[in-house]
Length: 245
Image (cartoon, rainbow, N blue to C red; front, side, top):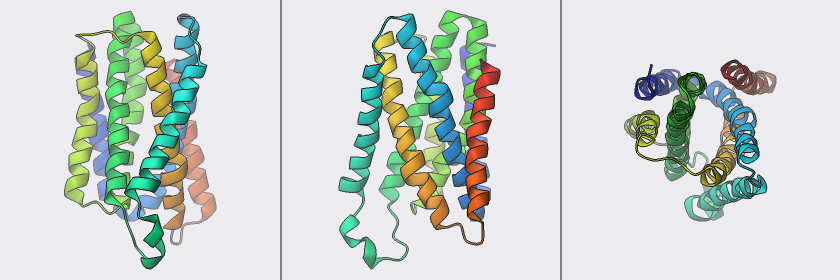
């Protein structure tokens, strides 16, 4: 199998996850709790180890990536709180949603998915076996990326049609990312900084957006069940990354 064919499998995986989230929208709090754990697991067991691997192999200072992580976290926090959320009027509404926050969150995930595809392409530049291993990991968590994209769009009040469009963008992103690597190579220092930046985005989305929303609309679901699903998401990514490694 080559890089393009495997990237097409990620497209199907992302679409499958998003359609799953649309069908079971009434249980979104369960889905959000699980996918928050998945995002945390992706950052902890996939992105951060990759940062230190790149730093070690190319004698780079990993603190640059950590600075980028903090910048990514604070940038998204600033955009959400200063520009996108009308925080001074929050108390005037019972069900006040912010569709632009959902769109921005989904775009951040699409950017991550694009770099997932880039990661597959660069891994194939090393060897086919490495490329296949990376692709397996990406395919596994792209299903959850599809869930995350639709979940974030719906929970912030976006209509189903717009949610489907963002899902399609997220599904196409890894294919475009993989195809782009046929024309260029990413310098290791830039790749390391990028990984840190998007790790910050994903940490913010998980801890400050998805988890609070999941627990705010839990209904009759117990807190223990939601926390357990978050832990399951983390564990799933640990297993996936270990198997891929």
